[in-house]
Amino acid sequence: MAQVIDGKAFAARVRGQVAEHVAGLKAHGIVPGLAVVLVGEDPASNVYVTAKGKQTVEVGMASFEHRLPADTPEAELLTLIDRLNANAAVHGILVQLPLPAHMDAAKVINALDPAKDVDGFHILNVGLLGTGQKAMVPCTPLGCLMMLRDHHGSLSGLNAVVLGRSNIVGKPMAQLLLAESCTVTVAHSRTKDLEVVCRRADIFVAAVGRPEMVKGDWIKPGATVIDVGINRIERDGKMRLVGDVDFASASSVAGAITPVPGGVGPMTIACLLANTLTACCRANGLAEPEGLTP
Ligand code: GUN
Image (cartoon, rainbow, N blue to C red; front, top):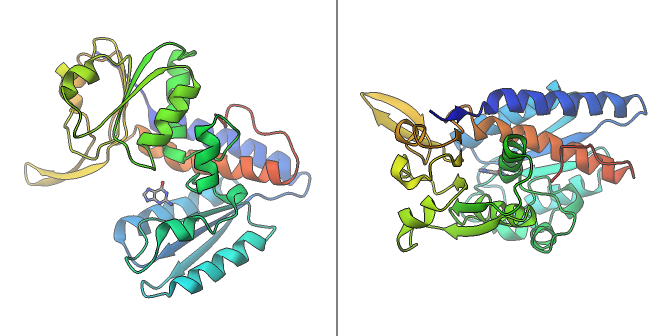
């Protein structure tokens, strides 16, 4: 039976480390600030934004929340971003995705000051990560990397398979694992002999957004399985949250596995707070917090 990696406890530890650093900065009159911008009333986004604001305050940071109506003109959002870019009390800015259809998400994200782009989605940060330079790194892959490092120590030479090629998770995850000297394969829904490819993985990261697609016989015995999927399905008349991995069968084969819920999910906001702290330290010419960056 696989060891179950407790993301909830891990995230609480990360938040504790962040809070400690924040307290240290406050002694020097510096308060890290995170601005979150939500356009529209998407219920899931609303839940995330509220949770982000709450946890930001809990670690001692300043939280700035901007909720705009769904029909806000793009120009108005860009003006708000300009203001946040210029505001010295704001060290991190997150624009919650998805944006309404009338907005150009790439244009909006690329309007952010890259140094404040705590999501790591700005084209400059994507390029820095891809070329092995100091970047702001997307929160979910950063959380996965922290758990993998904690479990393995060195990842050098391991076969890593990332299932999924999104800009938010799959691609940056692959870059991070490459930087750790893994042999990285990015697989996706069109990959031939997908199960065979997956079975080569010492480290398997599932981020395809298909409920319980990955079965136990896709997993190499003893592999570490990180399940990024968050899928709502109905089973036995109840709504349930399941990952991209079939936990029941995979956990009898894997060496270690993250559950859903309680695995990667809680790590994402913890890493957002870590990135905000990192951005604040950089903005003030201070040393970066150890263990909270890639
Ligand atoms: N929507 C879903 N995931 C994310 C994320 O990581 N960042 C932002 N900004 N929006 C999201």
